[in-house]
Amino acid sequence: ENVGSVKRQLAHLFEVSLRTTVPSEPDIAPLVEPCAAKSGVKFGDYQCNNAMGIWSKIKGKQAEFKGPPSVGQAIMKNLPPSDIIESCSVAGPGFVNVVLSRNWIAQSLQRMLIDGIETWAPRLPLKRAVVDFSSPNIAKEMHVGHLRSTIIGDTLARMLEFSHVDVLRRNHVGDWGTQFGMLIEFLFEKFPNPEDVNEAAIGDLQTFYKASKVRFDSDPEFKQRAQQAVVRLQGGETRYRDAWKQICEISRTEFHRVYERLGVHLEEKGESFYNPHIPGVLEELNKKGMIEDSEGARVIFLKDVNIPLIVVKSDGGYNYASTDLTALWYRINEEKAEWIIYVTDVGQQQHFDMVFKAAKRAGWLPADDNSYPKATHVGFGLVLGEDGKRFRTRNTEVVRLVDLLDEAKNRSKTALLERDTAKEWPEEEVEKTSEAVGYGAVKYADLKNNRLTNYTFNFDQMLNDKGNTAVYLLYAHARICSIIRKSGKDIEEVKKNAKIALDHEDERALGLHLLQFSEVVEEACTNLLPNVLCEYLYNLSEIFTKKFYSNCQVVGSPEEGSRLLLCEATAIVMRKCFYLLGIVPVYKI
Ligand code: ARG
Image 1 (cartoon, rainbow, N blue to C red):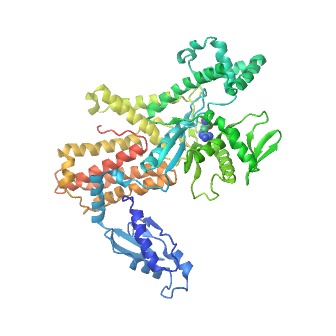
Image 2 (cartoon, helix red, strand yellow):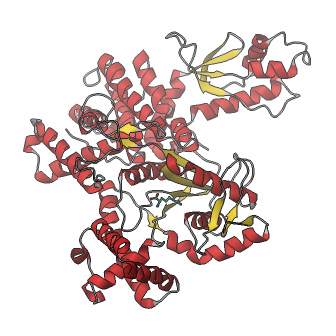
């Protein structure tokens, strides 16, 4: 059971009440939400919104109800006794407002400090998920779109893993396709001896790709050889397979440099992996009568889509869609994943929409989107430059990811060294901190926006130490740690001897917000929206700094023990948020 989620625990109480209140409708689900402030005033912490819906269902059937407010009254009266609730009231058309017990909030926090924040992990109704993310293409550039996919996908995987889901982190690299014929022939030309091939000799693979493309476009004889090379590669000829492997390996080394910096782990299962399974899968779809001929190609027509999904090209080759259909089949049937999540830019939405529709028609996925197994496309918007156009460097080349990360780190290092405190730090600590801050800033600037919107890449903004940035949040965390350090108390001892009390309004506000961590992670997982967690983290830091720490003296006050525990709980929750967002915390500034 997830003891962290206030919402779930309240929902449970309201469920009991609803069964007594409306015995004729045993399936009504409790609708419990945090109270929204109406013109700055809140009537409680949480509210139950069932009264109106129930009224319209049972109007006239239960004589004691005269309207939604009387239903609300009954729901309130039938709540089982519980130490969660301090008081209740009914407002407007039957909303039941709940004020939580301070004591209960305090005890829940205290228990988390002892048992660990893992006890607040959400429980999701599934065992295994695939998160397909990052997925760059061999020999082509890994651009900012891939950076977004990497950052968003990693966070989603972390949140699901925290919620006890077994996550298969999949790098669906583009390692198959006609471009390899050209690359291989070019490789043979440049390095007649395969032993001469290595990263240093080839240099930048993108440049290599461009050069081979020039050769391909200008020499018909080369072009012909390149086209034959594809056939020989697909036929499995050793020399061609080996060359393909060499090219993939060099790309891989490049990708891994980015992953290592970002602290992202994934398992490569590229397009080539699914290739041997394609004929069987297409045969199955064919038997189901789904595949038709159209202008020499083999296609699937789908409801409400005006273009067909091409699964075999007119030259007999497979494509992106045949691979994705097969990968989806594999993930559902072989890997037994219940939720398959694809993180790419919104431009690929129609592709996935068609693949998912085909999978439903084939009976691999249920028609109803709310039951498992399910497949979801997590789309994201563009990264824009200052000029409002697609993010590029001055010479209109695509931005290299490594350069971006270098710059983020260097800028945060410069800012760090301007602080008096950091001047005496050992070199290693400066390096580690500027990496944490720099990479954290890049990640957070991406994650804090709703992923569907485009966002503008701006170093000055993301590295600002004021406002909603990773820098601000990391420093806020470091400051909390230093409050605890400066108290001179051993926090483990304080945990044993002090009791959390939430007598001050701002202590209570902080305590309640901390307690909502669990349901926020659950929401971020369910809706695949990392920005929900960012918003929570930012608000936590604001409540701590602007309310609690401004108005409640910690060190040297009579409430020192309790307040140190609140500091510790805040630091723990912040660190878990950082972890889930892929950000490395700093403890000192
Ligand atoms: N390689 C593709 C690209 O760079 C992304 C692949 C996404 N995953 C998938 N299963 N199609 O656009």
